Image 1 (cartoon, rainbow, N blue to C red):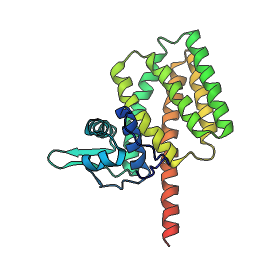
Image 2 (cartoon, one colour):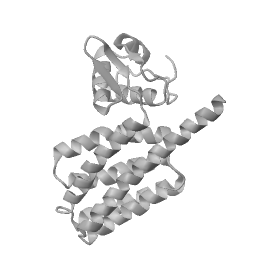
Image 3 (spheres, rainbow, N blue to C red):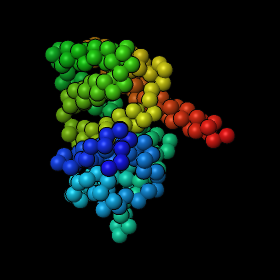
Length: 233
């Protein structure tokens, strides 16, 4: 079996479909499967050494994330991941995330705030060490803990469905030089607004946090494209 984008040559047999999904997602984002590539089930069965069922489930999940397009009678193919696509995802997420953040204020308690500050401490340690993977995990935990307070399963499900995609994009494109520090500062603004039960400050902090995340990932995409163009000359 070929080495995957993660350097993992271990067959994926006897694992859940989520493992197949993660592997396929990474292989798409690493450009192992270029945009427009047909994703034939039998080929993927051989590639990942699994049965057809987890492949079909993984393709359906990635269709939901927007990475894969499935057409009737034509099958699945890789969607082109461009700035417009990424920008649209962040725009949709911003509306929902700001809503969930505002709704969370109704149910936030001192115990929850202590838990969020503890997660924030983990974010700071990961940022100082330059551990991007850990920072993304703490960031997901921070927002997940907050958004669940809103008690809106449908809205939370929409945000949750893109977390793996967003984190994978981040692992592929990286962060700007100062973005990790900005994340810490923006989380602090959100927490302070929650402590003070300041709705205006909370809405502003949540909105800016989402906007800055979008701006940074689009900037990183621009920089990667510029490097490719420079190499091609």
